[in-house]
Image: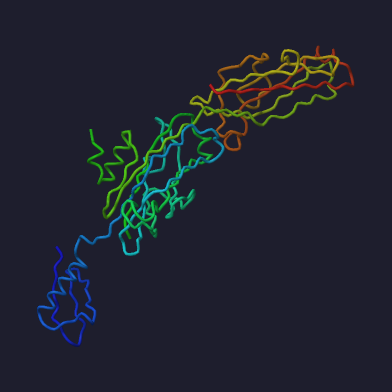
Amino acid sequence: MTQIVAAQHHAATPMFVRRARGSRCPLSPGARFAGATSTATLALACLSLWASPAFADKARITGLADVAFGMIGNLQADAVRSQSLCLYSSASTNGYNVTASGTGPGGAFQLSSGSLSLPFEVQWSSSAGQSSGTQLSPNIPFTGQVSTATQQTCNSGPASTASLIVILRSNALTSATSGTYSGTVALIVAPE
Amino acid sequence: MISARFCRRSVACLLGLFAHGVAFAASQGTLGTTSTGSVSIGASVPNRVQLSGLSDVAFTNQDPSVAAANAQNVCVWSNSSTKGYNITATGSGTANAFTLSNGAATVPYSVEWAGSSGQSSGTALSSGSALTGLTSTATNPTCSAGPGSSASLMVKISSASLQGMQAATSYTGTLTLVVAPE
């Protein structure tokens, strides 16, 4: 549990409110007041700013749709499906990272048809409407992304803020045995 | 049975469901310090075959007392579960006969096929009739990776046919090969 300790005010030194872990809550010079009552008020202010769980950064991913390649007519060309989705981050920078995992061994991006497998690629772009992006590696966070969403489900502001691209490469398609393949990608986003 | 409803906050649980083949539609994330969504992906790969690596056949200055034969390695690729295929050959003669023509006269030839490369004899093909039950070892549609070839095509003209040909005259024809997965 976070503990708050109000430091004794001293005119020659800045006043801080200390948390149990040692991080300090500085009070701006304009906010210094003499007297125990004022100090307690400021300490509570710092509590709400620095320690309240209600202010933990959060993120949300919505607007995802299943990816249906259907019957692939040309096995010697890459098959690409992209979709725009809503990525919201409450971080002060609107930053986030995304981690993708597939249903292959170790989270590999693989579709399966019984014992057969068909690898695929996952790409991510931090803007909507893209047909290419940065290739993701399974279970590895892709950091440094920034969202333009102003509402957690993009009900207002931009309707979508990121793109998810799934690619079946031609060399994988021509190496695959005929059949119907399926799989899943889980996407985990976190503010940063 | 595990319900997806109770898995919303657990990635391990979600992946466990996926691994066990539970049908899933796209799921949306909730607001939190992490948020997890998922999409299902589906694709169908149709049966396909490809024949490549064919070369024209030229018999020149053939000794009529010796049968003429030409063998070539070709690539047949099939992506069926058994890698199986069949092949049907047709010639450019009357009723798709395997014949060469100089415009006035024709000469028959024979076609043989082997389901492995490097062969000089194989199974005789009949025009328009599929030779079935073949299996390819090709791992790439054009054999650019894996084995460089996977079948053999032989074209032969018997000594008797050669002896019936007019000297110093060119005979030409076309052999068409159609492969299909099985």
